[in-house]
Length: 114
Image (tube, rainbow, N blue to C red; front, side):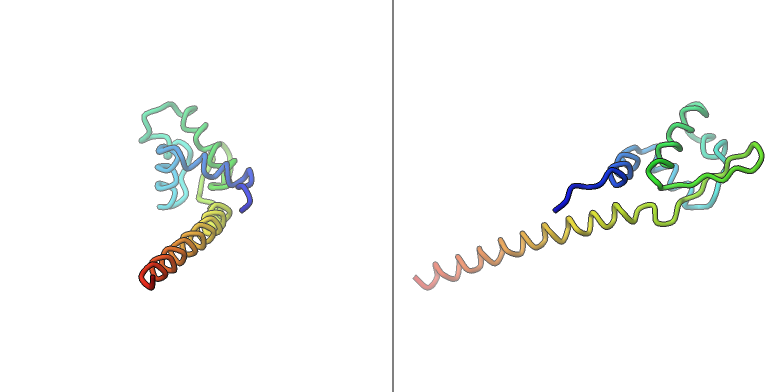
């Protein structure tokens, strides 16, 4: 099982913060200006912008600039790399657990026959 690549690390780091998950939840409703995203947050516009930049670096959102307004939206496919890593890891461990269960079943059957 290969370790996660840096982009996947960026996704998990971005998702580890409740504020950034809240921003993504807000953007699931539709595109918004940075000021609209920052308004309900208990922080400065600069603080909100830093969270937005982390989400951008992780590939979870995209920015569209129109004049002085910056519009933010969810990036389709931003979670694909992380989802693939989770699926691969789940299959790996599920296979291991299935093998362990089979070993215990064989062991229990063998001791009953003795």
